[in-house]
Length: 343
Image 1 (cartoon, rainbow, N blue to C red):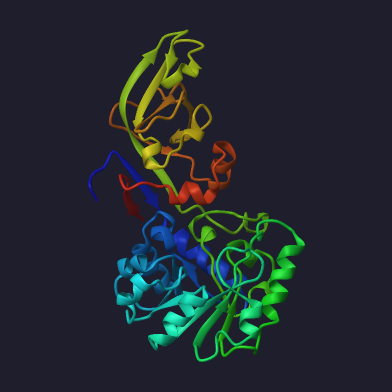
Image 2 (cartoon, one colour):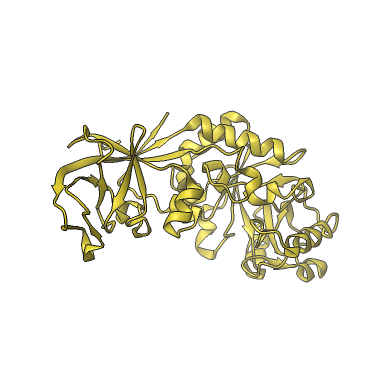
């Protein structure tokens, strides 16, 4: 904590509640947790500690650097990007294994006698993973595969592609020595029990995101931005606020300038359309969001002033609709200048 003028209020109870709800929806499958991108911007170590205490045992990061940053925490950590030549010095970290994605990664792991691993199979996303045909020709022979996984390309939509990917992965059951199959992310969990296989891998929904409507009554917000008022001023009728003068005062208007901007992850997409709150009073964002500052119309909260704290809307789906950013971008873009305060 640095006594920053902007902070994230993080609800640990909501985080755990979201995981437990997704765990129930996963049925007999184990429910893991994606904690890549520093726990989607909220702090991976704190997330792992809370979810591990709640019963989660499988965690997913993107890179070996992210695995190292977690420290020696109980549970297993799968590195989704596999193992490059540069990563081999990290092999042997307790509880950490790669998700092999390519011929070269498979060969590298075999040559190193690396032990247990996971493998990504491409069932149609054409991003990472070996092919179904590669597996049929024996690419994975000699590996000790813990989890054979794939990733849904369109889980937040109702499309036949979801069914096609599910069936391709199901067709690999028993064709390798993999102990588990895994397909579903947050949205995939909402598609139903036949997408859960043996292990689900939620990310967005853990942190308050809602990728499908079926989750809207289940998932609780986890992250709320708070920022301190730096200056209060009156903008006279006809005068403008901010870069490019996009907002003009229709009357003399009390305005607060807060310590928050796009360098913190409060993006320009909120210009002239974002929402902040002082208690129950709604405070519209006016003018362009700049790098470090945002202006608010405080007509509905005349008592606030310099040094007071303002909160911003924690509803991720609503914020995504207003800003034009995805819920993923809004979370992972949260910057280093925030103090992150768990409650």
